Length: 124
Image (cartoon, rainbow, N blue to C red; front, top):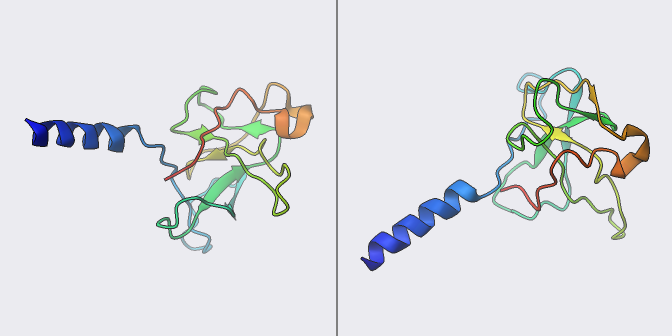
C-alpha cells in the first residue's frame, strides 16, 4: 500500500509540474514562428534544462489563436535583471510554432501589460 501511495504521488507531481517547451537557437533547428525570437532566459532555476531558450513574443503581444489563460501555449516568467531589479516580466513566451499577433489587453503598460497571460513560477 505504501508503494502504491508513493507511485500515485510521483505521478501526480510529474503531471502537475510546469514545463515549457524550449526552442533551439540554431537557425536550421529553430521552430519559432517568424513573429517570435528564440531567446536565452538567464537565471533559469533548473540546471538540468540544457538550453533554457524560449520563443518570445514582441513586447505587448501574446499568442494568436489561443485563450489568454492557456498556459500550455503561452506563459510569462519572473525575470529579474542581473542587479536584482525588474527586467522583462511582461514578456510572453510561446511554444515553438505559435504566432504572436494578438495585442495584450494593456499592451502600453510595458512589463505590466500582459497580465491576462499566466505567470509560471518556473519552467522545468
